[in-house]
Length: 468
Image (cartoon, rainbow, N blue to C red; front, top):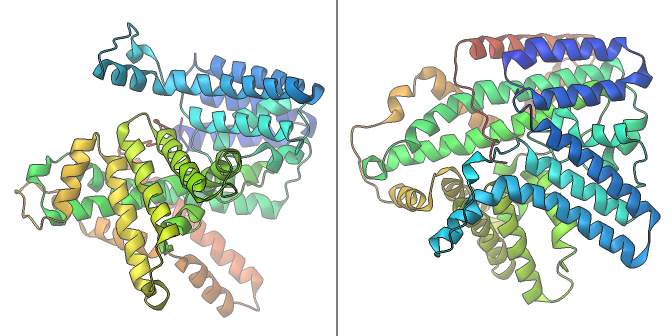
């Protein structure tokens, strides 16, 4: 079940919210926990037992961390982190490992095709590890209530597509949270914005991107190749940020304040800045739980470079069990190292060149991310710069006036234009807050209706996080 499905929008969510606000507050956490497990079991019934086991194991390890000190405590943490990583490696990387061992002549008699990848396994694994590490560091107390920890690990708004929520950020809200009308309304509006991003923009442009990447490289023209990667760059941003917005909005409806996960990454002027704006919860997780523990920049330049390479190698692998993702991660890591060692005197004077550099680099990187294999990615990138005409095979036939309009809207809303428009409207009705609020509600009502209309007219509604 995904947030942009009619089952979720018109069955699960209304029933869930109705019951949630009818029952007494003291029963809400256990209701959310069972609802989250039901949500997860909807498409993966047997794998919900993996989630339950994960909750129980991390609960016990957390208790152990609070009761021991010294080497015993460190051993418990190590075992806890390894247990979580082993689950992730088994379900996500077994096939990848077996295939690569077979390539060097080591055949292992294991049928990796029978292993079903749990949706969101990377997200809840990282949340588990952050909880254990924070308890070990005494930044938060271990959770003595199994229901409360289970709620944190399985909370359905951010379970399958993030953001990666840290226990330290919401443990007080799990125990005691308040929901007022303003917070609930802002959650609805945030959810609708995310839904519109996903359905109206990401799906429309994703269809063009998919058609482009189905074409053999020999048949691609340079123009179509650029169209495809531009559409995919916009698709993945609006899809991912859309899901994050929906998760944040759902969280607000329940009284949780999840942190923002995207901050207009395509307006960045460097890869370093891009990663401060893109998937912020993942970037900060790697900084705090991998880069800094490895030594960060405290042990000299050479060690810092090695640490950065490790971080971006793992970043690539986190996204998928494929060499494409490894190359994508190292590709970004290379430019991070480049920016740390080379200063560009024109960067401050001609900021448009910095933006161009960032967009070009990120777009080329997305080719590795989207392609099925490295060979196709290399040929596709070559087509971007070959100025070839290709054949008559073209997804332009799908590029109607509506899609062109959506493409323009996507390009505009990659920037903070929403804030600019909102400020202008507020300035016009500055002395009439009631009118301003009414206009906002009408806008979101129309946006929601238009999104549902679009959703009802198409069967194209991909879920691109199944590999994460």
